[in-house]
Structures are given as structure tokens and as C-alpha cells.
Length: 201
Length: 201
DNA sequence: CGAAACGTTGACCGTTTTCAATTACAGTGG
DNA sequence: CCACTGTAATTGAAAACGGTCAACGTTTCG
Image 1 (cartoon, helix red, strand yellow):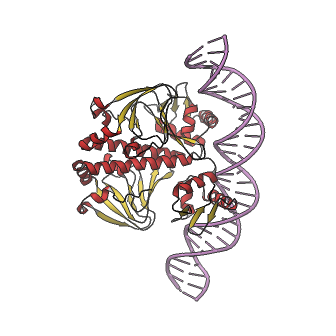
Image 2: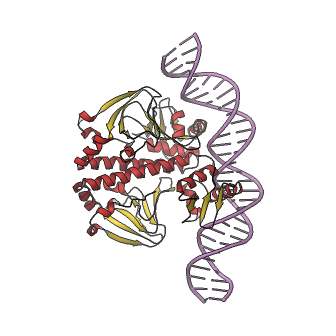
Image 3: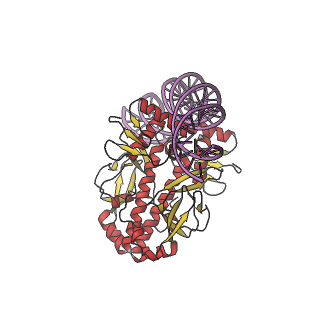
């Protein structure tokens, strides 16, 4: 969904960039910490969690290599969510102060930054749409359609279904059952590492 | 949620701004139309719908006075959703071309624009969080908390519950039942035009 | 090799959806 | 001024669906 071959971050002088490795489970920042930096994933996967007052927490973003996160921190004093390394990871650290001056100085960079945000808006709206689909099977099918590449339409799985399930608002069990049903109906074909969508679904 | 007293749009010279009135139900643009403008609501309410392939459609945004929409059109050839006037409305029309040159010329404006997008990202993430709350009552309660203003915490209703219900991913019936239950439990107090939250919920 | 996570399936339960019926209310036109 | 119409609000009953709990085989990784 984020195929920016020329990302705005890459236009910044390398001097401002710091790489930070993260162990699996390590926290990059916690909800409420002073917002000092924004980030880009270079390796692994960063899980952004937002904690609600009731003690529940929500996956707010799953940042994968090439994706940026915590952009909103630029305009905020505190982080509004928590960042945890999902797997051994590494992130590029962009200090707020330097970034703000760089964006002010270069309007082209600022436009690229805005475009990245606009794309995130679209992505989030898509995820929101997905949640409006009540049926577990249809929701998964729609999710698969969105993830599809190539012909035959194929979804390559780079993480277990147990990780996907909460992202699309279902339990792992519901996902397994729906996948089994979809396959039995001949609407999908499952392989260990991928799913193929059958035509006419 | 969008209390920008000094909105970036207002910083544009008035010459670029056109006002367009819309009857109830009138379409501003359709999904797939060439993306030529972005908009700001000045009166009424604009409903942004996204149509899925299956024939279902989803409310993607409910733009109210002061809010902008279709910002992503700036970087896209086509509109990705449909804009329908929910009530008799009026919008400020911002032609893409003029806006792009204005943003390129004024980096401060561009930063404000980016900030607006970052706020939208946060808003969308909040809506996404809400959907992760399974219980209808808790979901509504959390939604109410997010809408709350003043003391005692009060939510002013400017539209019927039948409109709110799909926005938060519930049927109208479920909303009515939950509201009745919440009131019976003494967690909220309902009035014709508003809801008050009781302390300690 | 062993532990932890993943994948899978069954049974049961609770909640929401769905369908249906009724009341209330605002706007419309005769 | 009042039927008439459409929408909102409300409640009931039943059905459907996903969640939860549980058990177990499999895979992965240290």
C-alpha cells in the first residue's frame, strides 16, 4: 500500500538520520511520552498500540519496512500511542526539530510529506470500510481482495493468521473457520504461504 | 474534533474560493470522476461514500461545517469516493491546480495543510479503535466520551441516532436498546437533544 | 529436545442482527 | 386546519453469527 519509490524521508540529508535497532517486544516509546521523533521502519515490524481508559488496547497501525509512523507527533507534544517491536526490527529516527526545519525550508519535501499523510488517510478509510462488513467470510474475502497481487489473484502471507485476525476485527478461530468455509465453497485456494482467489467471487 | 480557528484554507486568497450550494441528496462528485477540486463544508453536511465491488457502500466520512474533504484528490487523478449532500449544504470549492501552486509557494500553508492531514489520521485511528470494542453499550459509551464537551459531560445531538448508528458500526435498534440500558443503569441521562454522561462510568 | 506459538476443530453461549409491529412527530398539500 | 406521508424512536421475538472455552496436532525456534 506504500510503494513510494522516492520517499520524502530519503530526500533528507543523511546526517539527520539515526538508525535504531529494536529487539522483539522492545518499546520504542510509550503512550504519553514526550513526542520528540518520528520514525520509518527499515527492518522488522513495529506495532502501534493505543490504550483505552478501560484497560483495553488496540492495534492502531502495523508499520512494515518502508512505512513511516508517528507523523502526527510532529504537531503534538506527546505520543498518542505506544510503539512495540513486533519482531526484531530497526527504525530510522527523525528528530522532530530537524524535520520541522527541513520541511519549512523545502516546500517540495513538505508536499511529499503531505502526500504520505494523504495516503495514510486513504488507507485508514479503507480499513474502516472493511469493518463495516459484518460477515466474517465476506470481510476476510474483501481483505484478501485488497491484498491481492498478480494473476491469478494471490495474497502472499508474511505473517500468521493469528496476527491478521485482530487487525481485521475477528478472532483467530473465526478466521480459520471462515477460511475453511471459503475454501470448501471453492472461493479460495489455500497454500501454506499464500491464498489464491478464485474467479467469480 | 476540528476546531482549527485558523484553518489553512482561510489563508488562501479569496479569489480562489468558490461557494457551491447543494440540495439534499445532490451529488458533488461520484466515485471515479476526474479529481479536480477539494472542498470545505460551510453549511449542512456532506456524506462521503465509498462503493465496494460487492454493491455495498460505506460512509467514509461525514463532513460537517469547517471540515475539509477529498484532500487526497490533490495527489490523485480520480475521486475514490462519492460525495452526497446529506442535508441542504454549501461547500467551498478549492481547485486542485490553484491549491497546488499556493501550497508550493507558501511553506507555512503547506505545513498547515500537513497538520490538517495528520489530524485526520488521528481521527480515523480513533474511529478504528472504536470498532474494536465489541460490546454495543461500551462502544456507544466510548463514542459518547469522545463527543463530550463541557461540564457536566454532555453530547449534543445534531442528527438522529439512525444516522449515528451506522457510523459506529451498529444497527439503530442495537443503539436504542443500549441507550435504554445505559440510562436504566444510571450511566447516562437522555434528553431530546442531548445526552449527559454520569460520573464514574 | 522441549517450549511456545500456530493451526484446527468442536460445542456452547451470549449478543447482535433481523424482522416486525407500534407510537410519535414533522412537514406537505388539500 | 387536518388528513397524509415519511422518518425517527421504541420494543418484542427469534435466528444467526461470532466469541469464548477447550482440546489437540503441528510447526518453529532456541
